[in-house]
Image (cartoon, rainbow, N blue to C red; front, top):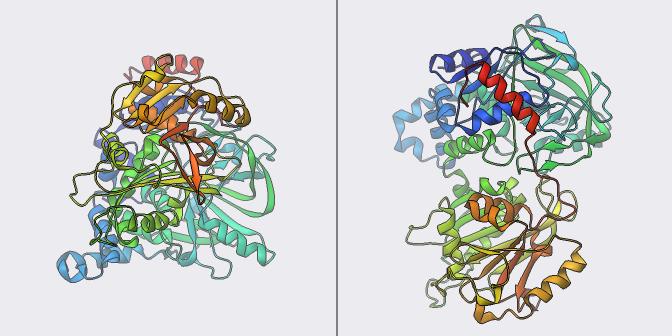
Length: 601
């Protein structure tokens, strides 16, 4: 079915047994987030909080907590939107699937935004920021945040909904230096369309008008996170996925979503204020940094409006299911855009952007008996120049013509790469470049390095599961064949650690590590060994390739770095953000709330 409101979706989920109502009063200060995390971790249903301290509005979370629930919500439009994307990538499919393509006419109709013939502000009441649910997620968060906003902006040179951008960037409602009810913090990162709009407004010397929609049909939230081309409005995708045209009107020069539960309007200029900290999706806090301030114009709420939110933290969380939904919808769309790319996987357990695994083609010199990466390097550069993929920090890429390799079988993929990588040829660094805003392994905000490990050819080593005798006096663990985690002293400074690591490895010989090509230095080897997800999270969120990678017998030949065995320093550094930790007292209160409500999670 198509939903005209968030309320309709919630009632539908309840009929299916996919909704949990919590009737006891809960505190938005960490309690609601803790309940959400507990229930999401167990694969539980969507959660409706009916009594939230400090606000009259109900709140809902975990709507998209599983791929199965998301597919159920969009069951009437899912296949048609998939086909629409498929046709866009290959127009010939219109004729190959003619009757199915006829159904796209209806989907295309729904994609066309509908301007209400009459402005209907009577549907909304005017409220204040302080009337909204003030949800504080993690203990060190700088204040209350909106975590499922739809941030709308228009191109000042080409105004209107068809040149608009709808994005999801967290909004800080309180705390720090924000004037209560007058200002909110607007956090947007690299490669976001809103930045283009703000740049154009700045050149004209005008503020950028912003509308923040919260709630409405669930398709509107999904549209805000879809990686669409810059020339395609997310409002069209929202309508197609909702099977209902995106309805809007203008008031005081601001676009208002007619179906949203809440709308905040305001302006952004050059002013910035400290925003954060915020417990983020890499599993660490993103720290306090200057970000744009939005001067609040007005705040609106529907009668009986419902406030949707999510909680992010160390993956997997609800945003993981968002990613799965997008992947399911788009299928091989990216492969159509990057010639030679067969498969790509942003590894959620490593925080998404820190680690990409890819399979490409190697077709440049089929006559050459020596197999080595060539086309793979072209594909790698294309990947690292593509939208948010350009934020990737580690890219492992290979070619596999027998199609027996799967990027989602992560241990097997690592072993395949490590069996074939030529450490004197196949390591390619990108230094002093942009990385994810949320990744604090770099030397400054948004700044760090990247590395491509491109391996292709015949197997050149049999990976070992034995600890070399030279490591007998150290605390070590084999993670998988070919990878050793080594617990090492607490990190001090780069200067001191460079000397310490040089001393550590000075007696390590190439022969000792011929079948162990990767050693990872860590703070807690038992934690890394406990699960492969733990290993991935530690290794790739805490390592800045150009500064934290060393090698046995490392050398540089014609500016190309090489070694006999690769060492990653994945210890916590003083400049890293702290990891997210649950609050013991809050967890006890959550136990009591769930016990009183006879909820077993």
